[in-house]
Length: 362
Ligand SMILES: *Cc1c(COP(=O)(O)O)cnc(C)c1O
Image (cartoon, rainbow, N blue to C red; front, top):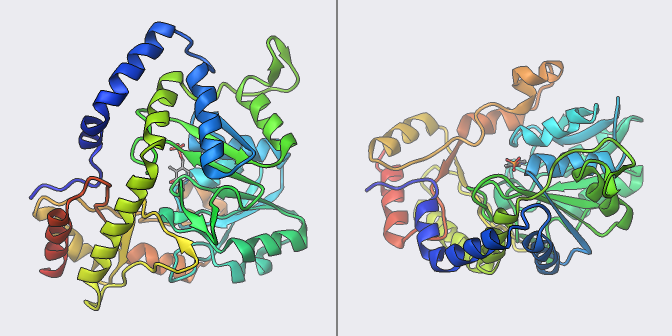
């Protein structure tokens, strides 16, 4: 049985009758930059998430970058984050001239270990970027209280967590700002690159709007050097349609994850934790196993996709040579044992069973 990591073609087929006419309409209206669908999507996303402001931009990486600029984080400042994430989280820190300080992860949630943040705070620390990795919310109450104590800005990396909740609040609305990605394979994905910032802070929102559009709040008046980082009108058309389905998509993901957990339980595999006080939306389903490479090869041999998110922690990447001497034992151990299985809203029960059979028969 051929099973991909995600099924973007299948999802398009199921939405084609909504998407095609809406795209054609936007093409004939020809308002391509910051057009009506971008503005409507921002309002609809803000309402869905319960954020005062939602400001779209060109990618998730840009969303992180624009917030750090807006928060005036810059040269020599330190920003605390996890090394077990996609590189963009830390790239954005470097774009503004700041220095990423990597803190180890919690072995159960694989998110930043909040109990280790305090020891990493120095007089240069300005912000914390918790990543809600794989769709699992980080320990936001603990993180916010450390941030309050030291006067730090909290930017939630929600690239993998659109619609996940922590103690009944949407991720991206718990810290000072949230950054989202709409990369095609994300749980809310468009058909190219896209991103968004959420915040309740009027000044941060205003600055993000200015920075994403060449530093200007009025055409041809430029207050600062900004960027060309706007969400495309055609992508906004697609996102407005997919936003209407996001609850159903996230619920399907959770159901699939529960089936995986049930079928794989107790087989010397560490299945992901599903805590009661937060809603994991399972953007990615990740197991931990000592036999990772062996299982991976056997699963792929059966035509079933699986991936390693992430094989090399950021502090050991060449790009972060300055951080190479840091030792993060849990992060390092997890990168040797993690294996991510296919998960997407359209996945059938039979497909989930086939994946489990392949994993268990190794
Ligand atoms: C995908 C991702 C990003 C970057 O988003 P892009 O839209 O690809 O720029 C940032 N952080 C995390 C955790 C991601 O998974």
